[in-house]
Amino acid sequence: MIEFGQAFAAAFHLIASLDAGLVEIVALSLRISLSAVALAALVGLPLGAAVALYRFPGRLAVAALLNAFMGLPPVVVGLIVYLLLSRSGPLGVLGLLFTPGAMIVAQWLLVTPIVAALALQTVADLHTEYDEQLRSLGATPGRALWTLLWDGRLSLVTAVLAGFGRASAEVGAVMIVGGNINHVTRVMTTAIALETSKGDLALALGLGLILICLALAINFTAMAVRDLARVRHA
Amino acid sequence: MPDSILPLSLESVTYEARGQRLIDRLSLVFGAGPRSVVLGPNGAGKSLLLRLCHGLLRPTSGRVAWACPGAGAARHQAMAFQRPVLLRRSALANVAYPLALRGVARRRRKELALAALERAGLAELAQRPARVLSGGEQQRLALARAWVQAPQVLFLDEPTANLDPGATRRIEALIDGFHQNGTKIVMTTHDLGQARRLADEVLFLHRGRLVEHAAAGTFFDRPQSREAAAFLNGDLLW
Image 1: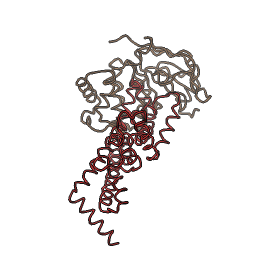
Image 2: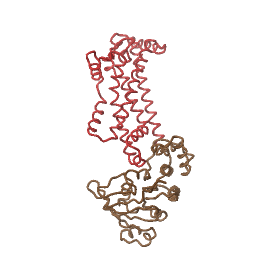
Image 3: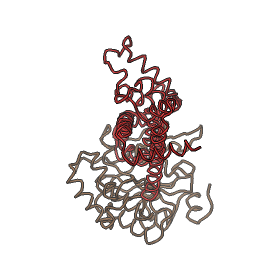
Image 4: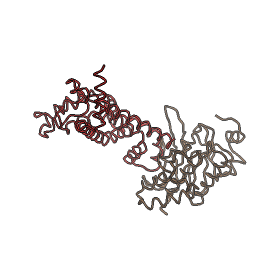
């Protein structure tokens, strides 16, 4: 128990003193997860909206797939990206394996279905309400897609936040494709796993605290956005 | 002024949903000029008729034909719904939206939208989120949005349902503004007082069929059909 208390004290000290090693890891984590989520939003939001709006063969299958892929196991995504990016894999020439780039790709694959599936739901609900009015105003289907995405923006922010929560918390995918290389691909979650097994509880706990704060911040932001949506859009 | 898209003719238009015939072989002509009010009990098919005319629904059989062929007629029509669907944006952005769809330049959009808001008595609310406006203000905003579309035909589906008399009066004044400006008005209502105030001609629907189509004075004074007479009497029709 004493050791536990000491570890906490050391962890707080690391955070309070902005320990260089800790800051480096947190910065890399944020860079990777934010990039992955930005790319996921870029693809996932229009994709979800398109599946919600357009009638095409296999539409229901795509929707079901997106929903199913919301729960993709990170290690499996890691494995697939690993196979694609490994020297002998189809994308091996890119030389991305064990770089932050590979980690972004893996998290992007993990998060895109989440953003797309949530966007699909939001846009489908809005579409029910807007459809006749938009057609009456003369909006083309392409235009309607962007209109619905914009009008759903407050709900979609929470979808993107959900994706960010997922990306920042997962360990399996970045561990496999990043390799947890010190100063290169070590992020919060992989560092926690490693330091814990090494017995360096202070750094592990410090990072753990930051992760939890991040999760709290995401949730508070999501709540604030929902409140704003209620006030502004009744 | 572009070529008129009127008259609008419906030729034996039928609309069925889930095996039920909701509009039954309707044939009629809407000409430019008189304000047409569609009357009838609930479920008579009034809203469906408007949606069929406006092209939001496709008839199961029959034809809806505008004077100008092809898709050109669509951009000269506007519709106000019973519950206005406002975008989750400011009042001003709502009115500017159809102008953006028509490719009007940004600055011009704002000018036109502000002028339309002014007309609707909403200038001071321009920056408010549209969805927090009162029911009457929302419907006026919807009409301001229709105004910037400069429609030749304006369809109104129960535009004052659930509004108090003050709000109703302002809406009716705006509708009259459209009429004065040469826009053909086609509206539904189940408010007989409103029909008397606004109608030049009345179309009386019952169970999806056009029972009477007459000048307003004739219709209200000497209804030709038993159903219309009962409706005007305040009897329950179904």
